[in-house]
Length: 356
Image (tube, rainbow, N blue to C red; front, side, top):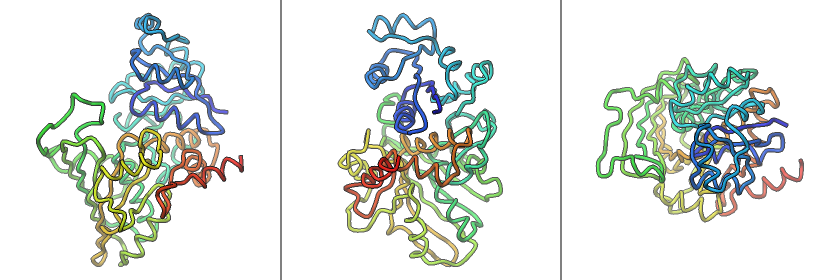
């Protein structure tokens, strides 16, 4: 049983904690917070021991009625591995703490690639994280791009990727972010940082990316043009993507014409927090002209990296091969949307629970 600590219990951290706790080979031994806000109270209600990320703030937790199990140093010392889910830039500062206690750590995509030994996407380079001490799970956008590129590269070869990323201005709780009423090239320079980040997973890939920010909080949307190594048909590409558990090819006829309805779909199906762990590719957008493939996909920035964090733990401890780990993660969480989206993958999850 891998004993996991989560440093930072916000948008990503709370989801990682729940995902780890759902795994039969892992357990959460504690989470660290900087302040006793509503998320801290939620963690306690879920049974996660609370640690003070900033020691001098420990009395604030007591005043808020939250028992503190200790300081973050104690959590790091006790854990077999730490998943760092702190805001961008803080993880890099925390690495020294993890090194002091000789505790392996996983960082998130907001950190620079050099914070870790390897950047990670389960579908694309699982084995690269084996026995690594420090791993960076790439960002939500890079995760989404990598999940599509990997099967295309394996099946046809990829000559070049061109992607335009229309990004949400902020998460639902990030009320200080924007734009409020604008459409921003972000960054204005080309390529955006997303292309170089994808190359931390696919070093030899030729990729150009452009980014925009819009006044929305729901999801990101990618417009992809991929030049493949072979001539293909749209039907063949669609079949290939439909075979990927972490890609949902949206069927025509469901009336899902935007991110808002995708979120409604997740909420109606009882997904925790309305999460969509899968890339959501509009099936009718898949088109091919010679070797050029075109498609639209939506990426839920709050949740698509969550399964990757779980798989990174297994890779670092060399617990499973890629296929076994991804299958276990997906079934325990309920990842995967079938042709009938109303049930998602409840049946598969139940069958897997019986096997264990």
